[in-house]
Image (cartoon, one colour):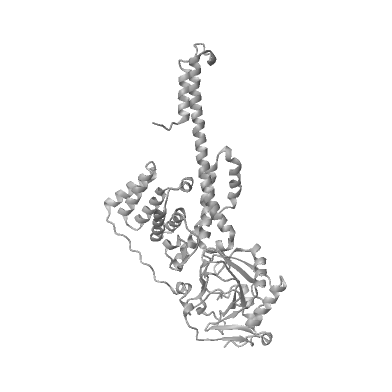
Length: 517
């Protein structure tokens, strides 16, 4: 029978045996003078060889694991690098990338930590500060949940790469599902947490990858049990926690938690909390495409009247609403102009902000997940030309307005329901230049799925179409805010959404739209 020894303990035991009773009385070691003494050296050498052999086997096992890991990671990375933009357009890929960078690589670093691998470990250590934080991972998980809820997606389909009945070449690992469940648990969304975690149980398989990540079934069952307990399913939760403790019997925390739930289950009666799937609200219905199926009773025209220039070069205009006044201009910007706008914006993109009436300044909020930057209209000939084009198509003066905003929505990027007008008189900018009378929203990219601009109070939904511009009036004729203009940017399900928007102020329109009665 082969036994796994603690080789340090065995070595010390043998050395002790050698020096106790097998050495000369005067303490002289002189092994060469005695065959018996050399026999003991052979025993010691055998122990040392066995120790080295075990060390070598452990290194070989580590190499095999790392080779398996590299093969798996490289396969996914090479697939991504063939077309990074297309790969990252899929939100599931974006989420799993952030999850890998946050959780996997620190574990790989720990696995590799060894003097023989110190040079390779240093690479990871140097890049660690540039890797995603826990906050990045939770934000990515929240984006996946947002897509699930907004578009009524089944996690069982999502983990197989099926989004809105369309199959994509992506698959989530059990560890991805576990972190989704962990995030939702922390947000007290226990029903959804249980669903994601249960999918992790169903798909879990023992692998070198999971061993290196120190990711075992006990973690999944432990979390799943806690989600059941939070739903007052104490007996089911106890079974899951018991299974977790059986998988890792030396985990004192699991044993303690099992006993706590056992005591709770013995003293109370299971009254499972009922989970009701909420009906879709108007915003979600618009995002899902219900409004886009409405037949428009209005019409399309060539706009020749907004400015004298349009008599020579009319613009294709589709009228969507009269209250609020809302139109779509088609083919308003060329591909070359779009690429120039993107190239100007990319180095300056920062987390988008929202104006706070309380602070009287822009602030970062969770309701708006995108990056943006402002572009001065004088920065290039293209920006000057496009600014003039906006004045031609709206018939308004853009002087005094904010700079043109270029925005890119990422993983599940959205902007929750809001108004563009301020409806305040204490802000100096509003007092001086007036409120935002109109919005020009230019779509700089197509979006494969999602990303619509929804007006739930009308109801109307406009899906991104590269080169088109959506224009609407935020204020009524008396310059009071029009509450029907409540709108939102739906989460990007698949794709990368680029937009440019211009908020036009009211006071410069004094002689262009003089009658407000």
